[in-house]
Structure formats: structure tokens, C-alpha cells
Image (cartoon, helix red, strand yellow):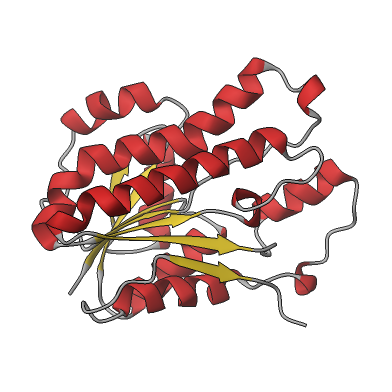
Length: 229
């Protein structure tokens, strides 16, 4: 039985992934921003354990974890949680830049640092669920894409650094996926939202599991998932 810690496990890709891993009998740890959300996650995934830490405040994660039990070993740490705010660079305030950078990039780096001993013990796997915006940028996506380009850099550096410890690192770049975040993006774009046009979160979760289950003689470093025809 493998042990996984997932951020963003309450909805979308994270929830689909948590459900699949729980169904096959793996041990789940789910990160929640507060105690109330932790209780909701435990109700949704009976048997799962939770850690509380606010990704919007990466400097407080170490303190938060010091007051909780953390897994002694992790077969995977899967960064799914994220936030998005669209807008022209010329109109985007510092607070918007900082919030997206904190949640999407700085906190995943800090979580990885804090959980590195557990990952090294298990020769585990770190998965960063990035975005197509981590590969290319469109107008009004500047601040979000900047945070996702940062995630790409973190993952690439981590992969080289942790190879000596047997830790694998995969970045997944999903295209538009039918999640609450995508619905919010459509609202910001002023476009009608039709979930059937986009990738099912379960399809992205299936791709992540394929990377996790790959035999140890190989490593999927990057994986791009796009909507089908």
C-alpha cells in the first residue's frame, strides 16, 4: 500500500485522483487550508488523514506542520491545488501577483522542502500539476502563467537535485479541464462554460497514476494532456 499526500483534493483533478487512489486501497493524506475544510475532506474520503496548512501563507507552513503529525514516509507528493486570476499586466496589482505566486509556486516548493525526508525515505515521487499556461502565455494570462513557469523551473531543478536520493519528479501539463477553476476562468473571460467541451478530471488523474505506477527503471518527466477531438 502506497502513501500519497495530495493538495487540492477537495475538487476537480485532486478529488478525482484521491478517489482513484483510495479505491485501490492506498493511504491518503490530504492538505486542507483550515480545520473546517479538513473535516469536509475526511467526510468525503473516509479513512483519509489530513494536514492543515494555508498555501496562501507559505512562510507559516513549517510552523503549522510542527504542531501536527506528518507522514514518516511518502510514496508521492502531488501538487494539484492552484488559483487563477486573469488580467492585463498593466492592470494587475501586486497582491494578485503575490497570491498566485504563493499558492501556485512558493507553497509547493516549501511543502516539498518540508516533506523531502519522507519522500527520500520511500524513494518517492513528486508530481506537479502545472498548466498549458506553464508552457505558453496568452494575453491577460501573465500573472498566472508566471506562477506556472516558476513551477516548471522548480520541478526541473528538483528532478536533478533529488535523483541521487531516488526521488522521481513529474510535471503534468493539462489543457482546459472541467473543474471549478475552469468555470471561474470562463467567467473572467466572459464566455459560456460547457464542461463537456473539456477534459474530464478523471482523465488527468488517470495520466498521473500512470506516471506513479511506471516501473522504477524509467521516469515520466513531463506529460501533456490535451482535450480530445
